[in-house]
Length: 212
Image 1: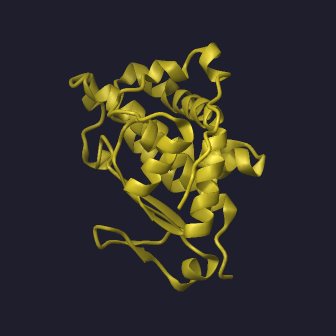
Image 2: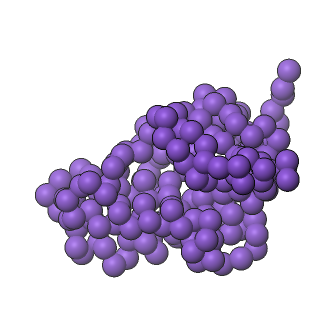
């Protein structure tokens, strides 16, 4: 009971990877023990109660999609990239868990990733009508490409979260940079790099990390 589920650690590691790759600030990552999750909700950095097994607190590009008008990106095209990046953030967690569990991603989206999918649907409704139908499968495909490309990094981060439980954003971001040898800037990586067939087969090698 006083252990942390590895599947949760991989789930949160997937989210962490996407936020980091998009250059979004990560504030804190939490993977709770089974006992902690049974006791009740955790308190997030804003003082709100969250009934979750794990949580990545980070800066979304579209913070409150549920409060935005449907189809707003039709009139504000600059929002489209932000929405699509936040969609990768949403689906990368369930995707990483699905790969770890060797199960279809749909199963994780219906269970542990239900909240992620709900937020994803809130984001999709903001897109221009012509983009809505393909938005979810495109986001899932991009998340799959990203997680597979950095799978060695995701695995190392998951192991770290499984051992530590709670990690501040600066530490986890620094670890990702050390493991990958990359330092993403805000929205510096191109979403189209997750779309081509060639890039979907690319992988990032894990770099050794020395800890004091």
